[in-house]
Length: 208
Image (tube, rainbow, N blue to C red; front, side, top):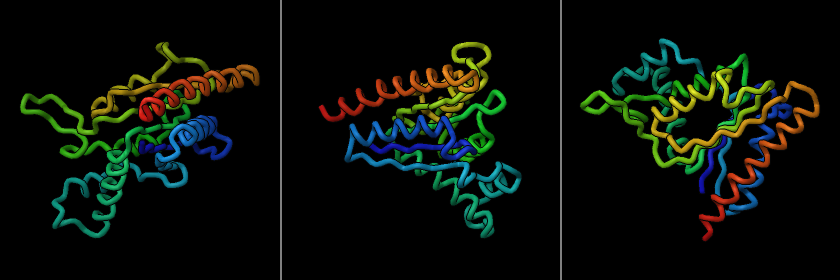
């Protein structure tokens, strides 16, 4: 199995979402030693904001692009190729001000390419072209909002992933991380337990 792990936290080794990703990576390596794992850290190597120059590059004919535009398209192409090559995609997301980090939104903007990662049918219905992926979203949240109207991030992610063709999505949230040491420890322990349940059966099935 090829696994792509996308990190987003600006806190580096102090990040709870990264700790969850590290736990999943360790379990994956233990259960599938022959698998490959690619890690992309959007805090260390941020994707540029989706601005007018980006739009101009992506919509310009290949033969007329400037060197700067070629670089923009090459980055987008590389991000998409990396995603398409993975069997499992893991997004490790902290919640900042009730939603995803800005660097992850920029990443999604570079992935959404008409005719490449999605298309519109003759009936005008969008069809995602990134198919056959197992997506795991690891969320680290200071408060508790999972399954409530206060969760303003998960509905958007579900819609966006489906738009790109990724409908097999599992969310694992570590919550209450800013509600005291006991709550934080409980939140992380529960999330790690869910990761253990999630990863092991998949690897066992592949080995069967």
